[in-house]
Length: 300
Length: 234
Image (spheres, rainbow over the protein chains, first blue to last red):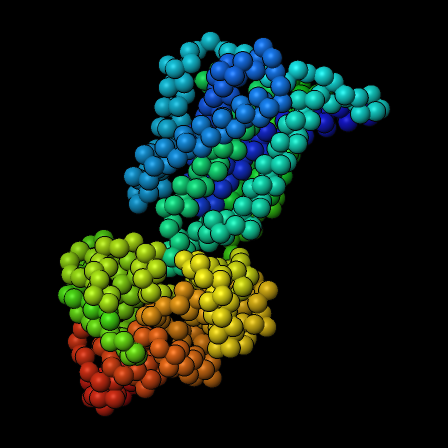
């Protein structure tokens, strides 16, 4: 029982990371029907931006919460800018072309970011500094949680609540929902569809950046290819929850994280990555629209 | 108020509009009738900036809007209730209306317009918390029109408001169109129900395979032998 609960705690923390990345996939899909395959690489950039920001602020030598928050913020702003640039210069020019063109562009951007990262940051893994000193806190029944896990938990949930507020209650969020329903109808309301698409990319990229920094707290080894596997898994998480569905992405991420940790703990670590794709195949067989996704509605 | 001057629009290789000219003066109800595929919807879509034109010009209150993006055209005072209604099915009636007022900042004015829309369509008030996708076809049409009014347009483009509605409801919709016009909104109405459309409009245009075949007072078009034969069932 103790082991199971401990795995659950670890799975939830891992899953929240996936969920943050999955949100970006699902939002962009909801608005453009595009799988932004470069999204995992934005997550990688988030970790690197955090890494350099940590060096700059000297947070590695004398960590304090303010610096850590600053690092998170710098990384999010940096990736928001990257998201803006990707959308403006890679996806916007092919907006009117076929969906296949957009998909190939996405793969191209992904390769560009990975190899650009290789060029800029070097191929050797870097170690994300301990911007928060680790301590373990017992939860009772032999289960412990690290303060880093608590930070991941609190920050992820706060960001998700902020996103929820933006989508449900702000003018831009309502416009996002309108655009995701129909670009034509949204344009007829006077909504600048282009601006909302940009906004969505920036928002998604900022969440990926946060995931990059938060995950690096626990797994400090960062390198330019680190975004590929988490990116794919987060994509699966988004599909699992129902792509285009925001709560679905969170649920999918959590299921993915917990499943992965359980498989590693009870079966074998070699299955760590396979489980993601087993889940993908299962959901596509059983419920292709995802756990929370609506099957495409009939037009009345 | 609105002048369309020899507009040419292509859909891929299809020449959808061939030198179409049309005008609407302030306060008018102008109708555009014609068969399926004549180019009526294309014309409304290009006025709203949704489809680019190859040649020709669209001007609104003297301002050239031919190349203007659709969201800015709404800002100028042209709004459209599109073909197929396109209500946001996943949002509530209130949210749909709110999106109609997306460009506006005048809260007091927006509140007045909610009331005005609910007075025009009391059914929407009853159903204001309901998801738009669960409304009946007639209610969705009311919502599409109400939503278009929320931007406080001076020119309202209506694309097939009577499509698929029961005869009684069709009468109600057309009565409402007249009421909207009486409040000072110029209306450009695209319809397949030519008889109804011509009986409420001041002037009418007959569109045939992308060109204007006839243009006259609506009352005269109603008497025109060709129009009778082609669009009014004998």
